Amino acid sequence: LSQAFAANEGLALLEYELKFLHDITLLIAAVCRGSESNKVKFVRSKGSIDSIISCIKALLVVMESVEEDQQQLYIDLAEKACDSSCKCIVVLCKFEESRYAGPSVGGMAVSSSHDHAQEFHRSGVVPLLIKVTRYSQSKESLSLASTSMAAIRVLAINDEIVQAFVAGGALETTRLALSIYGDNPTLVSVALGVVRNICGNDEIKTTLTGDGTLQEVLICMRKHLSVAAIQEHGCGTLAAMALRKASNACTIASLDGARDILNAMRKHESNVLVQRQGSLACRNIISRSPQLRDTFMDLGSEDVLRKAGRFQGSVDEAYSALRDLGCQIGMVKFDETGKQVKLQMFGDKKAAFNPSFEESKDIQDRISAKANQSC
Image (tube, rainbow, N blue to C red):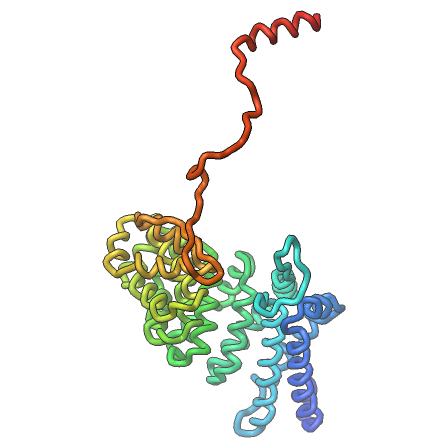
């Protein structure tokens, strides 16, 4: 592609190749989506990951070299092909729990998404994705920016990859997305997802609480209160920032973050993901900063957390948050009709079993006698 364009010849062939790359990468994503076995087969195929990376490299050459006023057609085709290439990375490196069709161990799903992310990292995809994101933001190609940042998010799964993204400038592109494109819910959602994953690094997340990123997160949560995905990522980001960092928790509370968490949980009362991340955020903020309990209690957190505890997917987090708030909590059980039934706790009823031993008052004498017989 890059050679054909640089020679400024065979433009009809170039158009065909760009359309072909778009179609073939869309096909790969469609075939692998929801199928763990197909994902594994593709990644294990010789040269598969390198071919996607080479494709993005060539497309960047075309996108950055074409004069907009002369050959806009090729720019549009290259951007579409780059967008579909990034979608391939998202599909191959994302665990799709709701559509999972793959192996299991002990009844638990086993995914290769973590291994695939590491393979892409080792193949040098990190600087390419940052370059694509910067290009898309400069050209205001928001669809491509959203897809490239989604790829960054699914790849940022461990400290090594997170540090590589941060060193390459991923924080700057993410903050830009939150500040300039804050009215676009799709772009805001993926940008918050990137921040959330990056906050897995303790040092970096402390930096983010003081460089304006935390404020941008809270602004986006307030602006898009009705968007469940943004509230989930927002609460998840706050939970990650506060984990093991009392100073970060205090900073969040000082910016009225506690109210934003509870507002998200109230607005999306039936969304288990929002309830789980919101409960986790409450727990992480309170656990090492007990002086903030009154702040949460004054905002009505007890009632919100008790409602979150009704869901199987958020009951543990809600229980932990209520415990750290100092609330009186107990366990209840519901039958299949939703009716509360009595939950028998260990020790409530005296166990009925026969003793397995008989008390003996001359045990020491018997032991000595047995020892003498052996001699």
